[in-house]
Length: 227
Image (tube, rainbow, N blue to C red; front, side):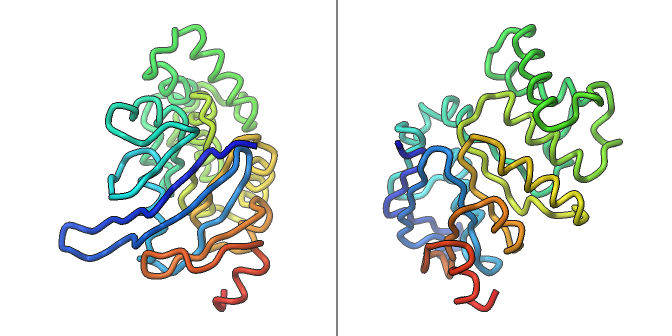
């Protein structure tokens, strides 16, 4: 199986000179799922923002064999879908259908195909019954699923989810975990929720002060750091 993510010696420094990432090495195979744990400010979100070129540090970041460079950003962002912690920051069109179709359209996909992709993605996440709903009328769990549908419609190969259980009640968390576990794409979860991570991901890494200090099964990683 080939690697979807290859990161070597990644460093990043904030504008004030504070080191945020200090020599990250990281690999992820196609179709695999991994959780990123660590205290606030340890570098998790800074790291994943390098995977689709939102940030640029020193070192090497390769997605699906393609280096993350300025000239490759359009293709990189087709392959890597970010699902934000705040769904309202990701859903902006008048209707759910328009929102989900907007990603493929932005990539130059013809309208008829974009709408078909959107229908297929909404069906996959269980929202095909609400194509004409305004996104703001959806529940927190439905908003998260609509955001994921928008990523699926672009045919991304990697899903990166930042604190995906924020604002979700227990049934919503269970439904999201079931959905993610059944998606074939590779997945990276930035989370503090060990139970949720264990239901979706096979592995976890632990960040401390801009470094990955441990990697292994979720059940083995978290107890070692008092989580």
